[in-house]
Every structure is written in structure tokens, then in C-alpha cells.
Length: 241
Image 1 (spheres, rainbow, N blue to C red):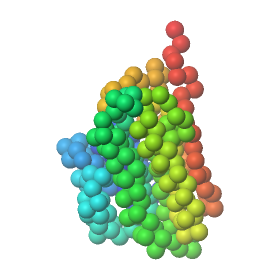
Image 2 (tube, rainbow, N blue to C red):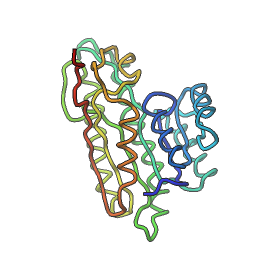
Image 3 (cartoon, rainbow, N blue to C red):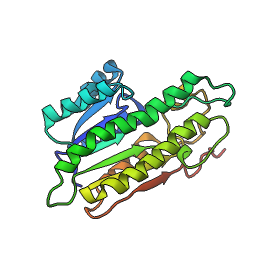
Image 4 (cartoon, one colour):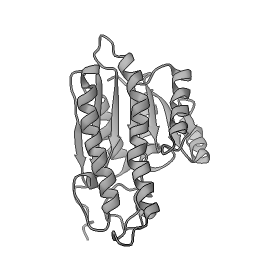
């Protein structure tokens, strides 16, 4: 896909990887609708990226807010070429110490949010499938935790394993409609994620711009080319002395 003049939605766009993904798309001359709860951060990002970035206040856990956000995209842009489901969080701890609220917020954000946004995107992408054979591309940012169970992150594991299964099922549902679905499984990325999760980050993590470069490669792949899964890890997670 040539990203020039495409319309993209990025969730969790206000900081970290979401902000970098938005920057990458704007740099490729796409029109980006950045969804997040933090309107102040979104406005600051718009000041930095310029008029091609459109801030949209949205809590992806809330059905009515997601519907309103995608209605805005449809009313203003009239199409949707790229959806990057990036919003997510982790709260770590032993299963017998993890309260219900911590479990629910991870499932609601990491799984329900992906479902709600995908549900809104698919009909638009399906309708605009044309002679090129590509109606759109959905990229779900999961985690290496969607492939490997790890002690003390059971709820986060459960949410990212769910994203993996959801992505594979939807990929098989919509591929004949010209919609590509890709699920990414990054290892540690240098963002504020681990501060929220209450855990230590790998000494030498991936950088957000490196993950964004991978997403760009996936989006720009040839028309009859489906990259359904990508695993990314730091080559040397521990710094050499």
C-alpha cells in the first residue's frame, strides 16, 4: 500500500509507541486520526506533527465513544485505509494478589478495545475494496506475552493471547474482502508501559521508532502479500559491560 493520502486511525496515540506510529504515518503523507483519552497530550502531538494529525478524544473501552470516534473519521475523511490497534496496558503481580479491577481493565483495554475498533473499521474497509484488491489494513499490536506465558503477568498474558486468537480469526474472515490483518508481537519497548505495569524494563529494549519502521514495512507490502504475524525482540536485551 502506498501510504500517501491514506486515512489511518491509531489508538493509544497520545504517547509512546502510538505517538511514534502517528509520526511515521504523517511522515509518509498519511492523514492520521489519533485516538486516546488524554486530550492534552493529543493536542501537544498535533502541534508537533501538524494539520495531518487529527486528535480524537476516545476511551476504547467505551462502545459509544468508539462509535463516535469512527463516525468522526467517516464524516471528515469518508474512508479508512489503516487501523492500528495500539492502545494497551499491563498490571503485573501474582494471580492471588491481582484484584478484579486490575484484571478487568486489562481485558477491557487490550481485548474489548481491539474488538470495538475492528468492528467499526471492517464495514468501511470492505465497502471500499476496489480493483486494486485492497480495502484496508488492520494492525494489532499484541506482545511477546501473547505467545509465551510468564509468571506474575497472567492477566496480561490472557489479554494478549486473546488478541492473537482474535487477529487470526478476523484475518481469515476478511482476507477475501481485500482486508489485511497483521498481529505484531514485540518484546520490551522503551516506553512508559513498564512504569504503569510496576515492573522493570529490559536493559536494552526495542525503540519505538524501530517498531514503527516494522509497521511501515508491513503496511507498504505488495498488494497480494499478507504478513499475518511478526515477532520482534531486542537482539541483545542485556547491555554489554
